[in-house]
Length: 188
Image (cartoon, rainbow, N blue to C red; front, side, top):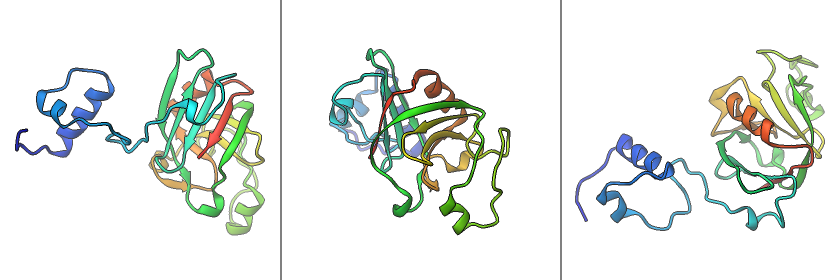
């Protein structure tokens, strides 16, 4: 094994190459071992560990590694995106739910608990650049819970939401196009 040290950029490049399935330099191959976390801290997951089947597709939102994974019903599509997660344990809900509605240009209404904590919030924000839900939202069977885009990209990869799972707008667009009403969702 080489004694050469690698900087952050080289490690990121190696991680990107590995994720893309490209051949890695011999030194990287020698250092590879079974990994539970990749360079972005996403936890490797198998849909079978969380769902009995892929009927209507499945979405796994991992609040610890701050990522969302989607598997299509036919198994041909697998998506993996960084996300924002709730910023406090009391705002975090886990378990099984499902997509009950898909909304383009959602209107945002702060929840009663948000208005209690932050009374200065507007009562409603329509679609547009000021809307915290971004351009697309997947409404879940749990009241007030959504997987949605965000105009504030600084939130992605952080514990920064008031309960919802937030994605980059370009990522929620792809997830929105793939998910259907009835897609199974598990938050862990």
